[in-house]
Length: 245
Image: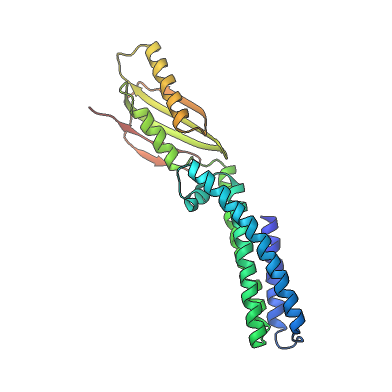
């Protein structure tokens, strides 16, 4: 956030300065415009290469997670994915905006266009900073796992015939690739302790196979009839239901 906000503040300062001095500064020469275009061209080549590598990496990870690229970036619990994608995207957009406004400046002779480009870049950097701060805060205070993870855990539990009800499911995103799932489940009344243990072991193994990011799984046998309700919280998500034949 510090990097993005400091960049946004500097760009905003440059933009305001350019707007206030518009019409008073000396018009750059053709040679100076050529130097500007060369610098922007080199910047675009470097930032474009970085963005291409970032997109390739994100596509690979999204494909591994069976999700679209945009959905993966938005829902990813790994802040580095959002940081890299956001920084490279804003950098390329910023260079293009600067190039476009430099062309307008050269054609019209109005320096204010360069100020507009700086302000656009400042807004983009500030937006990325806010998004990163929001998502990281949610992870730090305890964010519930992705809805797909919760739904998969629920489906895995209820797919076993020995389970007659699910009283509660709690999930928490512990890290970029670490998820906790805890559930209170209702077993058939005639199951002995050994059979309950075997069923719990099978459910945990199946969950880990379907969701490798699971690092902790807790199943608590509940004897009391489950209450039918649904609740959602910031640090956890709850599902409750009773199965009927």
